[in-house]
Amino acid sequence: MYKIIHNREKCIGCGACAALCSDYWEMDDDGKSLLKGAKKNKDTGNDELEVEKLKCNENIEDSCPVQCIKIEC
Image (cartoon, rainbow, N blue to C red; front, side, top):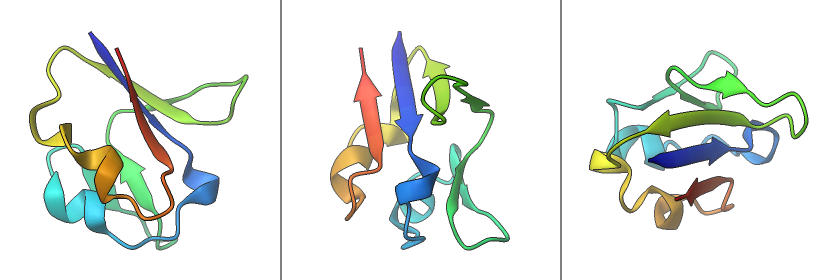
């Protein structure tokens, strides 16, 4: 099981994640990326999504220029 963590506050809206993995990412009306199906962690304020397989998220951490996306195992 993997956890995808997105710090939306840090996001600059470059769109790399949405371009590389549109099954999981989209651009929101505010210009920032949105992790589809994610739930907000009340303690950290980050959006989090648990997945069994990373699929197109495999290199998503490296694609983010401000490193606001993290993957935990």
